[in-house]
Figure: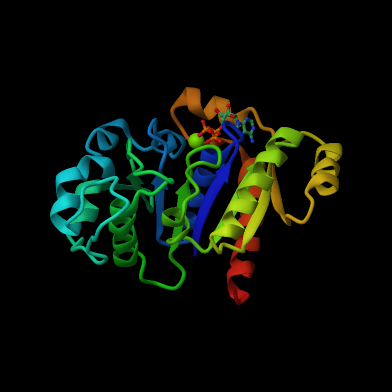
Length: 261
Ligand SMILES: Nc1ncnc2c1ncn2[C@@H]1O[C@H](COP(=O)(O)OP(=O)(O)OP(=O)(O)O)[C@@H](O)[C@H]1O
Ligand SMILES: [Mg+2]
């Protein structure tokens, strides 16, 4: 199961990614999460211990390594680069693991025009293949906000996209842009996940305005997200309503991957 999580800025992508990761990890699945934000926040949302985070090197820092292994400068979009660079030594150097969740950070990756982060993406893809070999392993890719980053290089390594929306027209407008781009590059499984839902009217609004984007589930608006941040813990640990809601979303996703593409 390889899932990208996108949406407008601040709608709850990182919150959903962390909750899903902890849910699957608690079920004994191997989970790999990738934080693609140049200003990373997933480690915090997952309550990774700070001393562990201090050891983490972002993928973007692998510049020399990327060049050495793929034969291309990072950010390059043209030319040739090796599609299967050697990566077996990389997981331990560029990822950290806590309570069943392994975390990678992209860092500030320069895109070589048209959103292409091709050498980095070849590297990541090989890394994923290396790290995720069991059928029930889970990859969650916390996308950078908005739509510009949605290049072929991104969707190459995912089969499903969750678009987080608040019950607002603005976040739905971004979701529709994302859906069009996703379709353009051949990604057909795109699902909405509502966030910060306060009442039945919020759900009804999303149902009414979602167009042809299916609504996979939704998370309540819960002060536990902010409380967890301040306490240095995760929403998963302190907010039972979020934990329950995300369990249902995880079940839905499990059902979904059983269906052929
Ligand atoms: N279900 C929720 N209940 C209450 N507050 C929430 C919820 N989800 C998110 N938030 C609030 O919204 C803020 C933004 O959430 P989050 O960082 O997950 O969004 P994001 O889409 O990853 O943002 P960015 O675009 O900056 O990466 C959180 O710090 C939190 O305060
Ligand atoms: Mg985020």
